[in-house]
Length: 263
Image 1 (tube, rainbow, N blue to C red):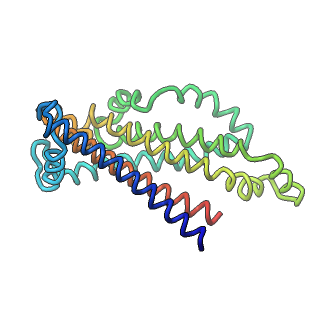
Image 2 (image 1 turned 90 degrees about the vertical axis):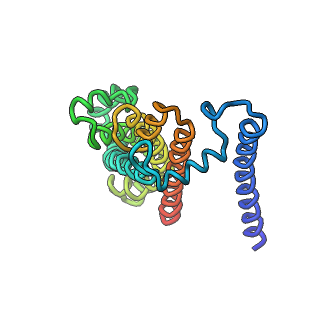
Image 3 (image 1 turned 90 degrees about the horizontal axis):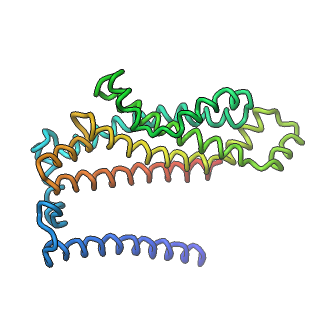
């Protein structure tokens, strides 16, 4: 009981420190803009102005033709489409490459050629093939997520301790039993790390893609605001990107806790 209380106190302490860091940042920002006037509103608006714009964008479609929630949902639809495809293909492929040598020898040469190429570099090719709709951006995001999922799944399986496999073999486990009962459960922390890295890569690729070729989404909203010198809307878009990415990351953390606890 005492240990549990200490753990809860420590958790509240760290939460308070996190809140304080944001508060200090906002205070410095406010002093620099509204008190000392070190910048002009057209270069860096005050946090008060940004938060006013943030809430105003929930009902105001100007100047980009949609509300903040519409842009956010559009971005999430595209990002999660590509992300889930990347996860569904990348995680099993990474596991198969690590466990089955023929698959590793067959796939690795092509994968090593694709891995250094950033996902956003594929955007011109995807636009030529699929236009500027959802599919082209989803394919760019898929490639970004796919690479991270393969690498982390592969590394997780390869890091399985030989002694654990030896014990399984001693008790007569088959190759597939070793994979599903020992290797994959052992690799779960690394696999979930890959899911988080893939999510970050997907979100970054999405915003970059929307900045270049899109008619809706947070990246489009930011790009439109840049063209008409509205830094408050640019910052609102950046805040929305950060909040959405943080919430999606928190969901993966929750899934990691559930699956690893059950495993």
